[in-house]
Amino acid sequence: MNYYIEAFQRFADFKGRIRRKAYWMFFLFNFIFSIVTAVIDGVLGTAFIGSIYSLVLLVPSLAAGARRLHDTGRSGWWQLLYLIPIIGFIVVIIFLAQDSQEGDNDWGANPKEGDIEGATA
Image (cartoon, rainbow, N blue to C red; front, top):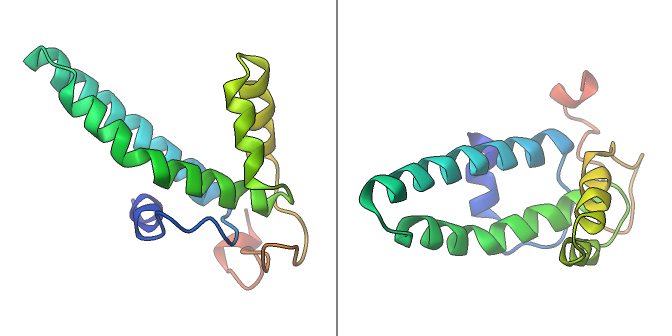
């Protein structure tokens, strides 16, 4: 849950890097909350809550994705591949699933370095 909260705290920060675990934990909680909002909308017979939730998460999701791509040594602009049906989505998911680039890169220091938890991940 800390990763989810951190994504909101850095909601418009498109600079820096984020670890793979932090990104996918944010994605997991986002997915769970999306299902909950869909169920609530289904019970109420509206699409209001899910739509508001999606709009609120738009910028934090793009920022977290950009930081994750920075961690793999790519620009955040690679997220534009999401606009290409099926192929673009698969390519971006593969990029997001890759391990961190060793050492420093153009977007900052490796978030794993100096992290006790990162030594085993």
